[in-house]
Each structure stands twice: as structure tokens, then as C-alpha cells.
Length: 81
Image 1 (tube, rainbow, N blue to C red):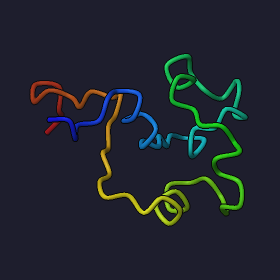
Image 2: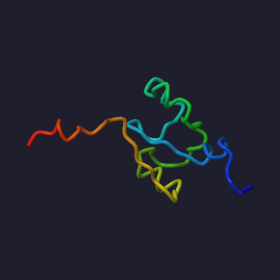
Image 3: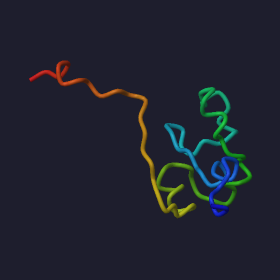
């Protein structure tokens, strides 16, 4: 099991993208307190064009994309017919 990544190694491999694009420390007040922890140093993204989702995919070439949302879908009883 020595090939498993430790939590700090895992965060080094992750890139988080939200409304402002790739979460970069220069986004400052656009980041929520929860996002600040995952914001990357701008120097890591120098030389790449843009920081939207497509630019991150082209620059990082990820093996996996994980989509999450803070919105909860309406329950069946809340949906209108």
C-alpha cells in the first residue's frame, strides 16, 4: 500500500474550478473561505491561456473530472407538474 498518496500529495494533484475559473490566490475576495484552502499560487499557472474549465483541461490533461454542486435538487414533492 506504499503507492497510495498521502493527503498533502493528493491536494498537489488537484485543481479546483468554480465561477471565477481555476481557483488562484490572486482571486482574493472572489474566493469563499472554503475555496481559499484550494487556491493555487498564480506562478503555477503562468504561461497558460485563461483559467476557465476548458483552459484547465487543456493545461492539466486530467484523467478524471469530478463535478459537484452546493445546490440541492428539489425533492419529488417540490417539483411542479
